[in-house]
Image (cartoon, rainbow, N blue to C red; front, side, top):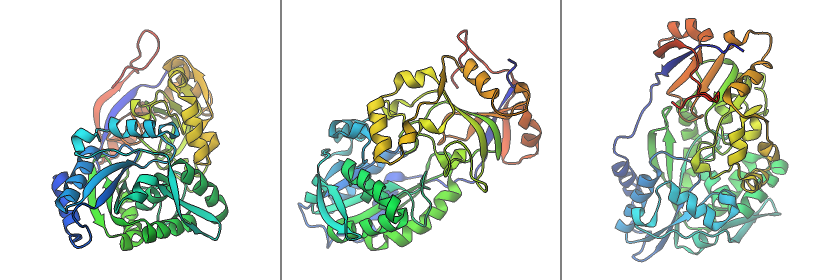
Length: 418
């Protein structure tokens, strides 16, 4: 089968960026004037989640340093629901793989899957909280604000979600995802967060917003009483600054890697246009991608292939690297079992692409609209089929890095790395 020639292009975004991350974190925390709240020797739990936040190690170290300056004794709590196979050891390993080690940040990591019940909402839904965090005098909630991959609301993924899913651990995450079905996402996330803020010693939140190049665009320390209002405002910015595919209609999207460090759903459904339905875009949702091929898992996902079921085709190496137990636990905890479903697999990229292009509709394969991306976070540069050449030429926000040329495959029929 003749495959389309590909053009390597660069997207140009208006992307704000924080120049001095450590200085910004410390200045933001200092602006909250916490001296009267933190007594010398107070224990302070600081959350670190499972998402691949840019510069998360430096951001965490800067929080630790600021807490020490206040006289507190900080420690790190892995806050990530069922990630890491739902084990304390697995979650600590993930935190450390991001560079958040005791040696680097300057405090110990206390990982546990044990939780305590701190209250009840809606008259029947227990509120669970990480045992070590519950024992601390104060808790700092750090997290990235971004659109959720499965829910829509004024508050989606961020500080509120960290207090529910992250600090609720496996038990809380599974329970809340079940309760969301009955009570709605917005209702549960607000009710549980309010209970946590009221009873769990939340000192402040550190909200992080990233730009289209997966770099830090904004860091803001937020007082707990302002979480809801400020997170709602920051979500608007996060949506404005999130990475996007350059075209609204795609026959085949080739994704080099997916993983939990990229998105909670492995691949960001907001980027590929499948937030509401797994294998197609909703009527008013864009982009509209006919077929998705996933080529690999990130090393940082540790075999967790959650979200692989969103694609129609995968390379055999994805199955070979998949930790089935970890993937199933994560998807079932999130009440999204189909996310662990295994798509059609073939042993080479060429065969995967040929089979996929047979199912995109009435279009010659060499004329198909194909995109190839690293992952759904890094979209500054990508490969686009020659079918998009005219549009690329007309767009001021796109520039050509390399001219149209045949896809480069090795002797086995696999695409060469970037």
